[in-house]
Image 1 (cartoon, rainbow, N blue to C red):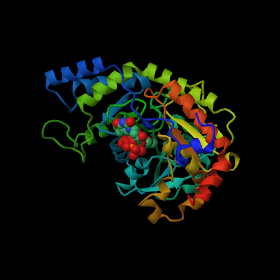
Image 2: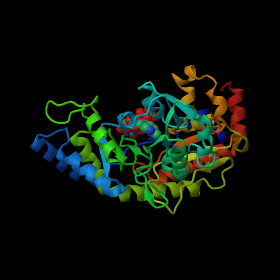
Image 3: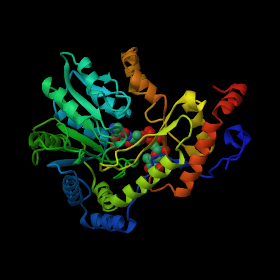
Image 4: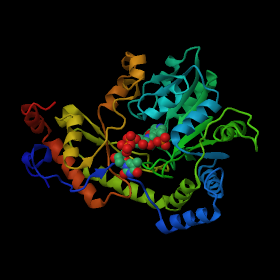
Length: 402
Ligand code: T4K
């Protein structure tokens, strides 16, 4: 516990944690079940290319999400690239900038221009009323992102897409296992893209999927993720290698078996953070809608620098010194990353809410690798830093630190 500023590791004290506490440590289910499945894969000598575990994984995903197709891929980025191509997007596509850069890159990689749209300051998701303003004759689609698992305003986006004849995709990388108005994420828009990266709620080491109820789109995606092969020696489409391996599917199936336990732990952690940080000046833990299904995979702090008396970046610096590897997901926003900041140097002018949010968020460690004692200690640390924010800032100013 810290009782005076000199106790802070940033000012020469001993770090609160001896080992680094990371954001995004994987949730891992039963090792025995995973190893049993891997042994089976080795016995079968069927390692990839639509093997039985990938097919079983797809069927389980479809059942869970209530969709007709949920095509597993090697990662979420390739799933995005394939879905974007298969849906026929080109020209310009409207996306939020407040997302992981893969959302924008998967468009630009195919020479489609991502047009960054501001977010709603409350939901933190793309603002449907601003989407209209970004539409030009070159616009072919919208890619919404369910940031931190909190679903977009799907109805409003569907309305804009329908009225303006645009395709609508969702980057649902954060939202596996989440629902909106009782419907699972996966079935909205023309297609939704999932990520099963190690850091995600459900992981397949690396992996992703495209969920859709559109049979034709699904058929194209299946071809595209396998070089366009429609049978031995018969290529009927341009394609890439987007296939998921059997070992990845085995990991995914094993994770699915423990999904409810992961949610329980995540929810417990989230509630502990909410309680532990209640009333801390200038610090708000972003909330989830308790009436919906939610994976609670992200614990996000929003800092009000004026109230806390210390900047978000200095809080993060203080946490890092204590071995809490908090992250600023998603600072500084895609529009301030290359190549976008060179292509559109002034896009920030239209992204005031994005810039404010990207400058004030902190993502904290949670998941099954984090214990309740660690969370209590971490909350105590954040409270101490915020309550002594002004004095700490002064001390750091005095040392010439930015
Ligand atoms: N759309 C959205 C909205 C996304 O957030 C993402 C991915 C995608 C699309 C693309 O999906 P994928 O193609 O990745 O399937 C990480 C992940 O690599 C990325 O998957 C994720 N979003 C993003 C939010 O985070 P980095 O560059 O921040 O990763 P890194 O290496 O700094 O690791 C993050 C933390 O996780 C560290 O604190 C350590 C911990 N970690 C990581 C790995 C890989 C572990 O404890 N164990 C591990 O095995 O991007």
